[in-house]
Structure formats: C-alpha cells, structure tokens
Length: 512
Image (cartoon, rainbow, N blue to C red; front, top):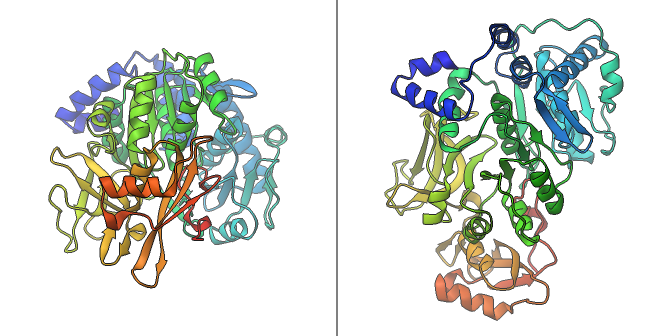
C-alpha cells in the first residue's frame, strides 16, 4: 500500500499524514516487517493476510474480545493456521472449493474466515438467520463444498461436511498447508429483504483499496490499537468492512454474539472503546437506555440502513459530535460518508464520496441531475463488485444532492410509490412520522389501490403510554409535506420486522 501511495502523488502526502495520525507509520522492527511482507506475498488481500500481518507487527496485542475472553493476534493467527491445516488435510479444502461460514460475532467467526482464506478457497459468508429451504438453496446454488456453522444453529439438509466444533478441528491440524497459488474470492450475500439472497463475489487488491481506505482514515479519526466494538453481524458488508479496518490498524475488536443495548454500553465502558460500529436501530436502542459517560468513545459509525435525521441529532446530543453516517451496499461497497459536521448541518445526509469513488445522480436520460432533482444513484470506485459498461454500478436507490454537494438518499427505486400520478418516497414520510411524539418506530410502503393505483400505508410502533392517534399522524404529514403524501392506512403494530442489519423486511408487512 505504501508503494501505491507514492504513485498517488499529492494524495500520497495527504495519506501519509493521515496514517501518521492514526498511528500506522510508526517504526517496525526489520524482522517483523519481513514477516509482514511474507504474509502478504502468501495470502494477498484476504482476512488471512490481515491476521498474519497484525500478528507479525503486534503479536501480543489483543485481537478479539468476546464473551469467552480475549485472543492476541499471535494466538488468533496460530489458531487460524491450525484450522487451515485440518480443513485442507481432513476435508480437502483448497483453491477451487467454496467454504461457507455461518457463525455469530465471536472468535469462531474471525478464526474460521482467516483459516479458509489461508487456503485460497472461496469464502461464502452466510446470514445466521438463514434456515430451511432458503439455506439449502443458497448452499446448492453457490456450490458449497463444506459448511462451518455454529453448533447452536439449526441443522440443514446439506450433503457435504459440516464443522461445528472448531476446537476439535484445530486439534486435527498437522503439517501446515502451503500457501495457495492465488487468493480465493469473498462472497457476500445481499440482504434478501425482497427475495432469496444472492451471492456477490469479489477479489480485492491493494490498488483498488488504497484510495478509499486512506480517505476513510483521513476522515474518521480511528487510532491504531484502540478497541472497536463492531455490533452488526460480521457476515454483512458493514461489519466486515470495519473488521478489515480494525485488522489494518491493529485494533482489538469487541464482539457480542447477540446485540443487547445494556451489554453494549457495558462493553464500551469496560474496554474503553474508542469506536463503535452500529446500524441505526441499535443506536435507537442505546438511546433508550439510561445515559452513561463514555469519555473514550470518539467515533460512532452508522450504516446498513437509513439513519433517520432525528435519531442522528438525538444521538449526537447525548454522546457528542462523534457520529458518522456511511452509505453503501453489499454490491457497491462504501459509496459516501457524512461527518458529524455534515450531520449537524443536514441530519438526513449521507455526505460525500471518499476519494477514489464516484457517485452520480442519473436522470431518465442517464445524464447527471442538477442539485435538488431526484435520480437514480450510480457509483464507481475500488470497493464496487461489478459495474455497467460505463463503469458505474446502479445501487437501486434514488437520491439527490443539495446546493452544497451533500448526498441524500430518498429511498429504493422499487419502493417509490406512484399514487394518483404523484411520486412519493416512503423514507421522507417515515422520517417525518418518526419525529412525532409517541412514535417508537415506523415503516411506510405502498399497497395496491383500485382508484389511485397505489396508496400509502404506515405501520407505527407506539411508545408505551403515549400512543398518538392515526388522525394526529395524518395531520402532521399533511401540514409539513403534502396531502397526497398522507398515509391512507395507519396501522399500530407491536414491532416493525427487520433483518439482522436493521433494514425493514417489507415482505412481512401487509395491508389490513
């Protein structure tokens, strides 16, 4: 990466300054540097390389903290090597094979993914909520050779070997497997809120990652060695992105198998964590707990789903101007980032693209839309999986820029509601309703209507003892937005169904 920064000229100087601030450009003993180079030469840009390089530079530094205690980078690397040896010799895992990992956030996940990538096998990360026919279909479609799954997850009709005891497997490790001829692919699943999850494969390179990564470090003041609590699932792009950043920075990652707001606050305080990665619904649950001082918390990254403007403001009012709002997707990777200053100015923004990435708001003719006009969001850059012929990937989102160049996401292209000829973006109505007194959570979507084609339906979770009436909510929308944006149907529900990354599962919502 350092060589790539030199090629980048002026940005290389800027990047070097950022890396120095983050603590990455400190002296490295020659022996440790040689081991780091050897790890990269063997494993390229993979989890295995990240763990091995961190073990060479910071062998005694904690790598992971979970309910079972902690592991140093040296211990994690040794465990990954033993697992890799057993996977290779006992199960025949190697280049050309696909291994699925289905494991919650603990040391088992990070050791398993490092082990698989040491062998050059393709690594498929599975949602721990998948089960039954959908899981079986994914395993068959992706050509999975072996499944590494936590023992407390449901059984699945799978013809290949299933590993549930990593301790026992590690004891089977013998002669270390040789370095692979090439790195395997990383395959993430799309969220699957509208259908069966699909795999999105990727091979990463230093050239592709250099500019976006150092741009992130220049914007987000992470520090090498500072604990980072990653609350979203590591099988999802958001959690995995920041786990990769933690490896590069040598940051201990604090992991919870299941998110609990009180437990997360306890862990942040006990570990003196400097950074927290979370999805918006997690931030909302943290705010529902009695506030406590977290003087070491300097960075909170929100992503995975839309951050309601009121939540952004409320969180910064409670914990300081530490909040960053990241926009991206499994296919698009990291597309833009809003800083605390951006969120104070415009709480609904997702900010600006990092250096090395491009975001275009395309109109019906494909041309860039002027400020204030809504269009389809297209991205390009080193972190995207695939692209169209013009180099841009359509995210499936609709968005616009304001006069200052800040990006806003108005909703999904396929979620846009056309009611009586008027276009309505559900997220705008959701954000307004979420600000109303007595509303704990809300989702808005379009449902079929014989007269208007579609009408708006709102599903509202009321706060206990303070529920607003449906008419009060309709009046609030009409007063601030427009009459045609008022939900005809307002249903009070116990909860809004969401997946493990906080996105509304609209398939589970239905009109009365």
